[in-house]
Every structure is written in C-alpha cells, then in structure tokens.
Amino acid sequence: MFIYIKNKYNFLNDEYWQNFITKNYKKPIDKILFSLNQKLDLDIRILANQIKARQIIETKIPSFKNYKNLIYPKQVSMEQCSSEHTALYKSKICNGESFIDLTGGLGIDSFFISKSFKNTIHCEKDFELQFIAQHNFECLQAKVESHFIDGIEFLKNTKQNFDLIYIDPSRRNENNSKVVKLEEYKPNIIKNLNLFLEKGKQILVKVSPLLDIKLAIEQLPNIKEIHVISLNNECKELLFLIDANSSTKLTSIICKDLAKDFTFEFDNEQEQNCKINLSLPLKYIYEPNASILKAGAFKSIALFFKLSKLHPNSHLYTSDRYIKGFPGRCFELNTICRFNKKEIQMAIKCKKANISKRNFPNSVNEIRKKLALNDGGNDYIFATTLINEEKRLLICRKC
Image 1 (cartoon, one colour):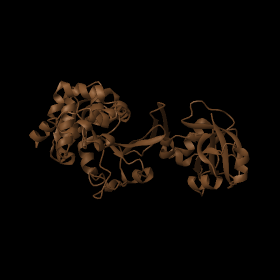
Image 2 (cartoon, rainbow, N blue to C red):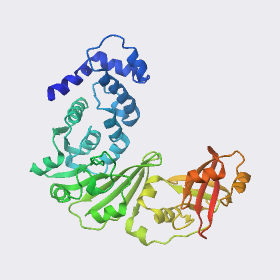
Image 3 (cartoon, rainbow, N blue to C red):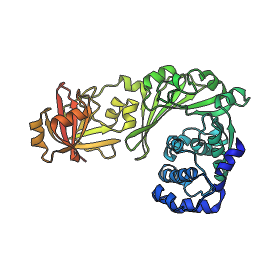
Image 4 (tube, rainbow, N blue to C red):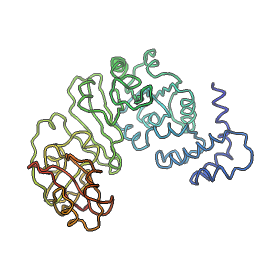
C-alpha cells in the first residue's frame, strides 16, 4: 500500500510539475488540461486535483501557498478540512507539553495547534490521507509525529497522558447522511468520554454547528468553555473544552467573529437569570451575528450594549443610539408596515428588497411572493413580531 501511494504522487516531487501547478493554478482547469497535448506518464486526475486544491488553498489556508512540495488529497477532503482562520483560533485555546489529534485527517488543525505544544501526535486511519499529512508535515518542518492508526485505539494502548486531546469526529452515518447528536458521531463522543478523561487533562471536541448547546451541556461533564466561531456571519465551528480536573459548572461561552476579530464572552448562568428591557422599534435595529445567536446570548448582548429587545422571542434589538462596532448588522428604521402588499409598495418604490424573518409565521419565500418583491436593492425588510404581539414588517436601510 505504501509503495502504491508513494508512486501515485511521486511525479509531484518533480520541479517541472510543481512549477507547472504554481504557474497555472489560477486558470480554468479544462484549459490547463487541454494545453497538455502530449501523452503523459502520470494520472491526469491527480494533476487536476492538485490544481483544484491550490485554488482552494489560496483562500482557505493562505500560508501554505508558498510551499511548492505540498500535496493534497481529493477535493472532498480539502473542502472538509479546517480553514487557517479556525485552526489558528484553536491553537490559542490551550498550550502545554503534549497534544494528540485523534481524528487528524489532512492535519491542518494538528499543524497549527502543534505550535502551542512541545510534542504533537497526529492519528489518521485513512492510509492515503495519513501519507499526505505526514509528507506535508515534513515539508512544513512541523514537529508532528504522524501515525496510520485509529485514534481511539492509539489512546487505549498508549501509556502516555496528554495535556490536550482534540477530536473532530465524523458527522456522517453509514448512509453518508449528516448527523448532529454526539452519540451518532464517529468516534462516539459519549461512549468514549471516560477514556478521554482518563488520558487527557483537557479535551477539545469539535461538534456540528447545528448541535443544541443546552443538550450538549447536559451530556458532557466538566465543560470549562464553549467556543462559537463565526466567519462572514456564518457559524463555522462549535467547540467544547472539557477540563478533566474540574467539576465546576460551566460559566463561560465565548463568541468569536473571525472576520471582524471581535470576541463576546458571557456567563451562561447569568444569561438565564438576567432581565432586559422590551420596546417597540426605535431609530436603529440591531441583528447580532451568527455566533451570538447560536450561543444563545440573547439577553447578555442586550445588557452589554444597552439595547432593548423587540419581543422575548424575536432576537432583534433596538435603540435610539447608533452603536459603532456592534457584533452583527445595524439598520436605520424607515417605516413599519403591516403584512400588506399596498403598504409595502408605498414604502418601497423599486420593487426590490432583502428580506429576513425573526419570529414570524411565514417563510421568506412566502413573504416575497405575497409582496411581489425581487431580491436585492438597498432596502431591508425584517418580518417580525413586536412586544404587543403584532406581526409587522420593518423597512430599513443598512447603516
């Protein structure tokens, strides 16, 4: 197997092909391959894959683009691996002597997190992926020890203990359908909890962004921190940091917006008990970013920025003040309409608007169809429920 995989990628050690990829990767793939009119003693699919991978690397892991000798797996593995942004963030959560990545994959997380530890072990049970990761670690001069093995088996058989165990489990079942629950992951997080707690001082688990945080808090012991990471207003990663030596109740949930480099940290217990103001819409409307909404910081964000909420369940906020640096979107309110086509046509002349809904019975498509509005333009409509339980459309412009 080793010889086969090595020979498969061997041509990429040739400086000619490395220069060819570097020179051409920004061009359309079909034109690049068409230009190779001579008969080649290599698998053209691998060459095509390397070119596509370089296109992905350009934005996903930009620090890798200057390394010519790196090789990359099939496109699906490239799309599933962590970005440099999120891997760098994880590298700052913990530090210490020893770190093990049980589900190493291509090794992006292993590489960046290893910078915070003296010794790093990378485990991967897919031979080709492990071969590629090990090759790349050597090219990157990374101090990472890579093993072709199932991470759980390695952990069961090693006598070593670790300052950090990292698990990014597969979130797909036998039918290749996405799963969300911890007990459905591979490896099964719940089933292996005792092993993790026995072998690691701290355990960092990456879970589905769709996972119910409240349910996970009930299932996982010794949670020290929860990190909710968003990029360009999309929740990218949800991380649970477990401390094997702590029995204190979780207090800290950290929301990180990587694009704006903004961090909002709140106390989970305080969030449940604090009281906030409710109000009819004022001059400005605020919509928190994806990480804050996912984390459930609905009251904490209002208290911190001195905002009022439109309704307990609407998760839109309002103020007479413009707040610079708010972690999310800010809009200036122009008018409030009923869910009525004539009223909307009076307020929006161009028959075009960006529509969102918060705590409203109709879907965005249903709203758009009833109002006969195309997507786009400078107007923003928030379909929502107000404090007096009235269903209203807020017509706004972005600040």
